[in-house]
Image (cartoon, rainbow, N blue to C red; front, side, top):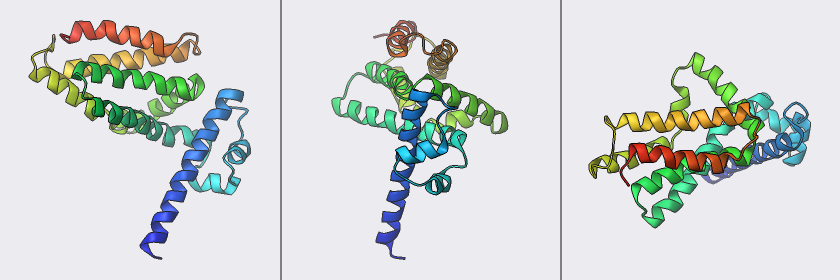
Length: 203
């Protein structure tokens, strides 16, 4: 098989996987996880159920495999846009954190909850896997390093800033899930991030 055909096939596989995730997201938000069948997801993605099982073993597998892939893509796209603007590292950092809340709001509370459950379970088997999947954390660390170089961190060591911010993000996400999405996670998250940032970083 030629390299051109191989690349085309890989692109088709990636496109099908994305289509299935988007279809699953829309159906789960509309009907709930239990009522979104594999057949419904495949039909909505305009593929066969056989094609579904080429990519995923089950509906649960969509959550565990694709959640982080799409979270990373979503936030890396946000970072790319921010980098073009060359904004202050503190504002850059805040925008990345808010993007996490925007992603959760986009896919919905049920899928976010399922992702957390799935990844809590995975972390029991492979400790630290949650952090390894979040590729965009490197950009957050770079912002913190810049702020440390500018002597703008109000706490030391610098890794404590990442710890506090990560804990806050997960805490708000968990609260939103426990509340079944009963508050605006983007608005509430933005307020909380800005409040916490004032205790960690000199603007």
